[in-house]
Image (tube, rainbow, N blue to C red; front, side, top):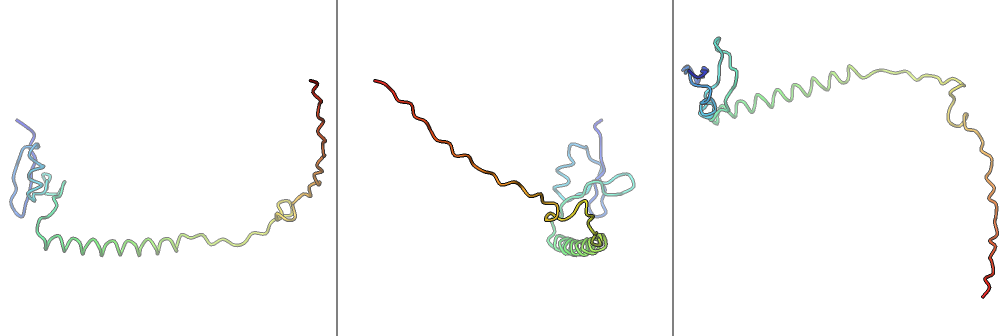
Length: 115
């Protein structure tokens, strides 16, 4: 016999073949395990349930964003300015003066062609 799974909608439980799971999920059934825990939830078709789920998700997103912002503030490292040693001084102090580059002017020599 083919492998079976249990689906639930409301208070009714059905045991169906695994191949039919997609059809039952489309009808609003949730796949559950032996203890009744939802393994795979269906998308609700009822507009009131969808509205309630939407509001719950918006509230959760808002709460999570606030928590993230709070954690970012707590984890920002508080650095104190560090004095630089003379070995690694500022760019101006360590800048080595370069010798000026003198360009040599070359004259071109033309060769005369004899005809």
